Amino acid sequence: MTRTRLLGSISAIALLTLAVPLAHAGGGMGTGDGNTACRIILNGQNPPQVLSLNVDTLPEAQQVGVGPALLLCDLAAFGTTVNNAPSTVRVEGTNIVCYPLQAPNKGKDTVTITDPFTASTPSISQTVTLGGLSLLCVQAQVTFSGQ
Image (cartoon, rainbow, N blue to C red; front, top):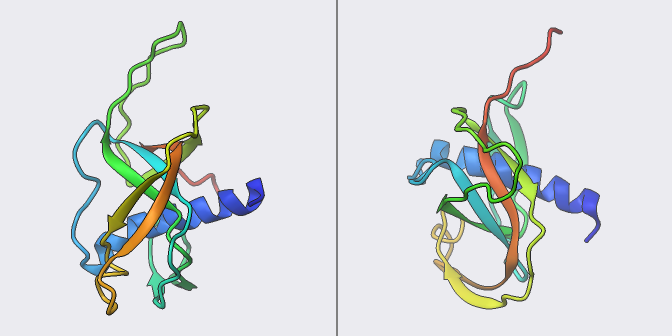
């Protein structure tokens, strides 16, 4: 998968992460310090749903298909700065930004996931294989420049 395609998929997942609570799927940003650590799903299934997304990062609602599950994120991730770089600070916002991680990608775990897309189909869940941690997603504020 090329970097551009992966980043496009990540953007779609970020939008879907924000849109899912709007679809009465429950949840919110979860617990923890606002950080979300994600692992790539290596064999996600392609759900049949099409969504009408209406989120603050889009000028108007857009209909989008849902691709195969790409990331499994831990909403309760907690990290601290261990080098001489400035410490991170908490930022409140309704968006997330995902940063690639430079971490070993050796883990290959099999897990079963139930989410709003699988729960509405006959299979109820999907069993997938996960790669290692690849992204760290943090809450962000988005301010539009003058138009």
